[in-house]
Image (tube, rainbow, N blue to C red; front, side, top):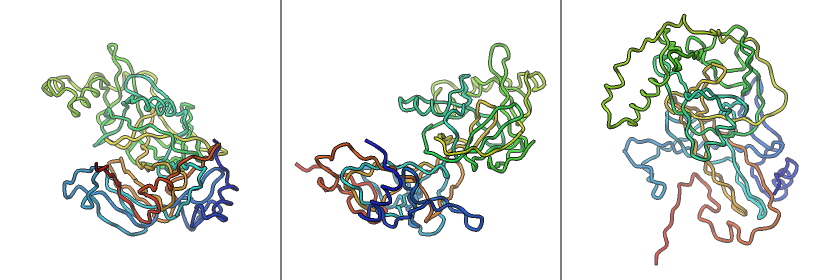
Amino acid sequence: MGIKPDYWIEKMAKEHGMIEPFADAQVTSSVESPVISYGVSSYGYDLRVADEFKIFTNINSVVVDPKNFNEKSFVEFQGDVCIIPPNSFALARSVEYFRVPRDILCLCLGKSTYARCFRGDTKVALVDGTCPTLEEMAQRATTGELFWGYSIGQNGRLIVSLLDAPRYIGRDSLVEVVLDTADSIFCTPDHLFMRRDGRWTEAGNLRQNDSLMPLYRDLARGYEVVYQPLNGHLYPTHRLADEWNVQHNIYADVPNTVFRRFPEVLQTFRGISNIRNHKVATVRDVPGTHDVYCLTVPESGNFALESGVFVHNCGIICNFTPFEPEWQGFVTIEISNTTPLPARIYANEGIAQVIFFQAEEVCHISYADRKGKYQKQTGITLPKVTFDVK
């Protein structure tokens, strides 16, 4: 099974209507008109999201049941910009209509523009003292492993948070952010870095000597301690972990007061070794495109890298099922906003990339042969679960 290139995609779209409408080149941003790119790429096609949305709302306290989706769960919206509330999701459809050939299987990946990603070898600081790469975390997550890291929470306080869904996003162009420690961070130009004053700045807009929010760690009495930017003191990591456990009822059978007796101040920041300023040295473009990864932090929307700086998480997740052989229709897209902030989705601009795999042999039964229930869908289609009646 091989991935089909741009000239094959163009031929199938123009001669057999595989994609309608079809953009035979990447439509990208210009100075006058910023656009999230769409159209054919080297080995795929970036589809667009239409201006029709169903935004989830819990105003009616309706349970989300995939076997029985209730229309009362959604508010319909049509417009150029859709705002998805924090920790919520919306359903949309593609601008393009797809007709998949019988020997083709399509996979769809979310756009890194919405994801804001890092190169796979970027190391993440975990509270267990390890610093795995994002690529390694994505592989380990497939077995159900969970990860906890550091975040800046409400009021600028350092907290422990769950780092959820580390995953491969796709391929994108990168910049290299070099710190005054000589550490390099490779990320998409729009990835947000937290400055020392709590403001966010895109990687591509960072300048020399910009001060970033630091993660300082040291050992005291045999335990790791971390710098608490809110008050300038050091605090034991294991106590921050206890706070997370209490908040999430891990210690449900133990009174919470047990974990509130410890004094917060262990020692002053002046006692820490190897103080680093975490200032930006340079930012430069990286040639070519690269595999990129990211993760999600539902509690705070940010996490710390091994290099000791805080960055924004990947908040937008697009969920798709594979486009099966001989399926046709508009693609229904589930767009999840896993951040604590509202998220914008731009209609008629790129949302995801479709990759075309050609099988070595033609299947016996295609999606059209078995008369799949999502065949020729024309609008946003809710899940359909049918039951056999005997």
